[in-house]
Image (cartoon, rainbow over all chains, first blue to last red; front, top):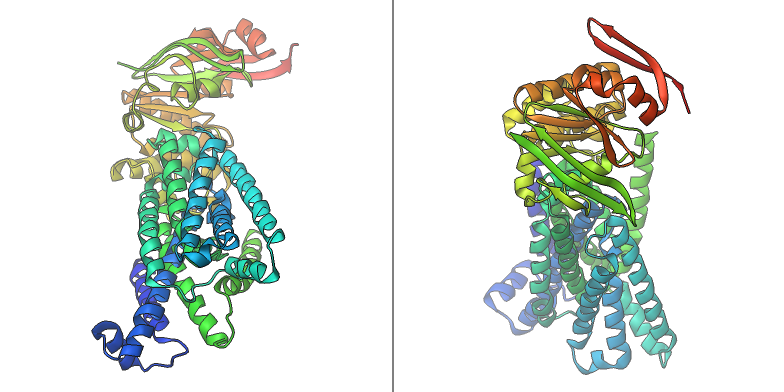
Length: 328
Length: 240
C-alpha cells in the first residue's frame, strides 16, 4: 500500500487539477476547453480557460500543497498532532496585512497591494517570532510566541473591522477572510507561486531532521541535528509558503491540520515520508473543495474556507473519536 | 585511548553551580557507572559534556562539530520520547548506523520479534529497550546513557548491563548513570560517585561503594555481601 501511495496520490491530484479546469459556469465541452487551453482556439473560450480557470486550478494545487506540507512540518517539529501552520502567527499577520490593504483602499487602487501587504505581514511575523522565541528557545517558547503574535494581530484585525467606515467595507473584509480562489488572475499566480515553491523546497529539506526529532530534542541533537538550523528552516519555509498562500487565497482553515492526520497512517507515521504525502494530500483536498464550492452552489459565492472548515471540523472530530476508541 | 575528556566542567543555574569543576577522563575499554543521589548533577554533567547545555570548562565532545560528534558518541537521554507510531526497525534505523549495526542492536536488546510493531504501541519498558537499541545502532566508540535501567524488568536490566560490559570489552567505552548500586558494582569496571555537582569518589567499584561513602553521599546503610555472582548491595535504612 505504502509503495503505491505516491503514484496513486500523484494521479489523483492530476485528475483533480484537470477536473478543476473543466468545471465552471460557462459549461464548455471537454474538447473545446482543452483546445482553447493548449492550442488557443476560440477567443472567448481561451479567455475563460487561460485567465479564469487556469489560475484558479494552479492556485488550488499550490495553496493546498503549501497548507498540507507546512502542517506536516509544523506537527513534526513540535511533535504535536494539534499543531497547524497558523500556529506561529504567520496566517494571522498575513491576514492583518491584507485587511489593512482593504481598509485603506490600497487594494482597490492597485491589484497587487493586497497580496503584497499580506506578504509583508507574514515577513514581520517571522522577525517577531525569532526575536520572541530567542535563538535557543525550544518548542514551547515557539508555541507561546506564536499564540501571542496571533492574538495581537487578531486584535488588530478586529480593531480595523471595528473602525471600518461603512458596513460594505466591513463585509468586504469579512468575505476576504473566509478564503476563496474565485476571480484570481495569472498575476496572482506569478506573485505567489515562486514564493510558495521556495517555501516548500525549504520545508522538504527538513525531513531527516524531523525524523530524528521524533526522539526528542536531546536525542536528535546527539544524532548530529542542528536544532537551530532546523527551526530557522521550518519558520522561514512556513512563512514563505503560508504567507504567499494567505496572500492570494485568504485564510483557508483545517487543511493544514487534517491532512497530515489523514496521511500519517498511510506512510507509517515517519515525518520525512509524511511531508511529500501531505503536500499531495493538501493539494487533493483543496482542489476537491474548490470544485465542490462551484458544483454545490454555482449561483452563490460559497467561500472555499467556509467549506473546508465545514468538512474539516467534523472530520477532525471523527479522528479524535477514533483515536479515543483505540486508546481505550 | 581517551574517548571522553572533561576539564573543570562547570554548569550554573543562575549563580549556583549544578556541576562544579568536574574533571574526568574515560578511556576505551571502560564501563563507567555514574552514581549519586537525585540532584547530584549526573544528567546535567552528561548533557553539558555533549554540548547540549551552556557550560564553562572544556569537553572534547562539545568542542566537536555536530556531525563529527554524532560519529563519536551516542546518547540515551533520560526523557524517553517517541512522538509518532513509527515501526521499531525504522526507529532504530534513525541513528543512520549500518544495517548490520541496526540488526545487532535489535538482537542484543531482544527486539527481533518487535521489528514491525509501531514503537508507541509497546509498553514503557519495551520502549526503553527500543531506545537503548537505537543508541547502540549509532555504532559509536562512546555511549552516554542516562538511567538506561530505569523501568526495565530484571532480565532486561541485566541484559542491558551485560551489553554495556561487552561494548567495553570490544574496546569502546560506556558511561551510564545508575541508581541500582548492586547492578553497578557487578557490571561496571569503574564507578564515579557524585554529590552536589562534584565528583567525590572515583575508582574500582569496591573502593567507591565503601560504607562511609554510602552513608555520607546517599545517607543510607544496608546489607553488603560477596557472592559467587558478584557483590550484592541492598540499602535497608535511612541514616539521616
